[in-house]
Image (cartoon, rainbow over all chains, first blue to last red; front, side):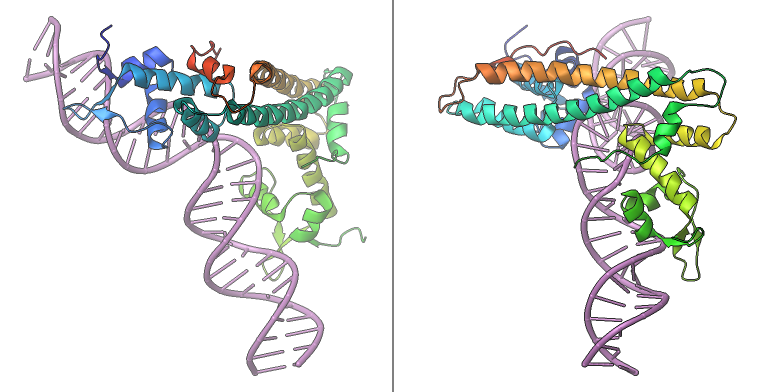
Length: 141
Length: 141
DNA sequence: CTTGACCTTCCAGTTACTGGAAACCCCATC
DNA sequence: GATGGGGTTTCCAGTAACTGGAAGGTCAAG
């Protein structure tokens, strides 16, 4: 692969694992800068662009929001970044993940318990329905 | 509280913990049937409506989608329901929750590991950025 | 010259709400 | 009677991060 061969969006999609649509969406939403165009008005990408998109894809796969990804990208590009800024972002995300996991886990445990107590036969009696009929648990917000 | 006193939406909101907006939204999206109106065209609700909305709120708080809530509601109303139908819904939801928890947990562990290895000082070296720079982990889909 | 595989833009739909605007209703007060 | 306050109504828009589809341009092969 030549160092400066220009790639089209489909090739970049194949290289990054991101759908072309998503790459265009990232451009449109300002997460990456607008791609150069060739004579046909087709977007063209360099290897550096592929690297940037891989960074984005990886950050997204770790659950960072696009907003966070934008900040991570600018830290990534900043050679003088302070690692504490990166770490702060990561820790905030970690806390968010923990919150979401705890919420889901609580639901999961309740559902598992109810499902386990439900006969699951042709009769109408059902602890699941009965539970839903009762007062909802306090949901913290 | 009289048995058949008609409540206005704000009172129902207070009784169910659901915002008025959300109650209107549930009506509009067909999850509950359209409320009767009084002379002012204000929505009025019975105690039975409050009970239905509590059911909905509780199911939502357990993470069921509105679509699922619709099905649960019709099972709730069906005196001849088979508990296995309820259970099937619950088990599908459980599987979904487990999938989502596992996904989040994997992210969480990676982030926690990276954050722990990051010095978090004023220097630019950062394992978090380095990880994101590398190839993204295969994400199953 | 047509076909097929790309690419382009634009619009709509997804989920479950939430916020805000403009207007109406009712009651209490000045 | 005017005003104010608190409810209510409808409608429109925005959220997050895409995804699907339509209509049309470009290019190489057959």
